[in-house]
Amino acid sequence: MKFCFKIAFLLFVIPTVLLGQDETPIGPSGPVAQRPNARFVIKVNAGIPKPITSNMFRKCFNGFYDAGISFNLRTIGNVYFGIGYQNIFFKNNAYLKAKYFNASIPYDTRMLADCPFVTFSYDRFIKERAYVSYSINYGYIISRYTSVNNDTSAANLPIVSKEFTAQYIKPEVSFNFIDKENPWVSFSVSLAYTTLIYKFDPKAPRFNHFEDIQKRSNRYYMSWLTVGFGVNVLLGRSKE
Image (cartoon, rainbow, N blue to C red; front, side, top):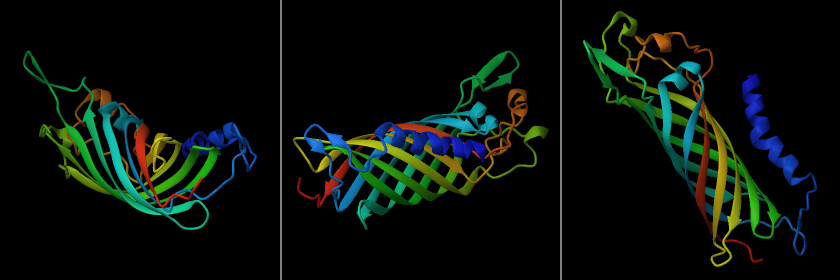
């Protein structure tokens, strides 16, 4: 839990301090009014996930992409409620190889996941055409391991399913910049931390026979940090 608080501090407290505590930020032409943002926002983003915990999961896999889309409706002020979908792809680390006599064959095991979610977010303007979005996503991951080498050594027994499902939580902060030429579009840079309510099982991808993996701790849930970029479509945006 201490680790979760550290990540929450990184994502939410530090940006708030950097932006200042004043509820009315100062722009080039004076105070920036906290006007309503768009009535409806479509967010599309993609990034590269970096495994953080468990240590066993981090030793086994590295992130290839984490991409998603969400549809968000403004409710009160600049508070949004939305629904969305994420697609996630991890690939095993290159050091994992199958040894047959004098030959060494690389693994090509992948973790693919579909993730529907609901999201709550809040937009805060810091400049005339720039705002910060704080959001929290809650969803359900439907994951599967593919291209698995079906090792049946004692360490991988009893055989477990190559699929798993779990709930997940994803706090995120993004910095958004509205295009001058197209004020109904904004571009974003984001930082997010995803935690699955699920502990990694090395038997599922058939990795438990690797000695280097057996030595790693597996006390915490699977989690990863994603740095990404995105495009937002701002529909029904208030006039400036």
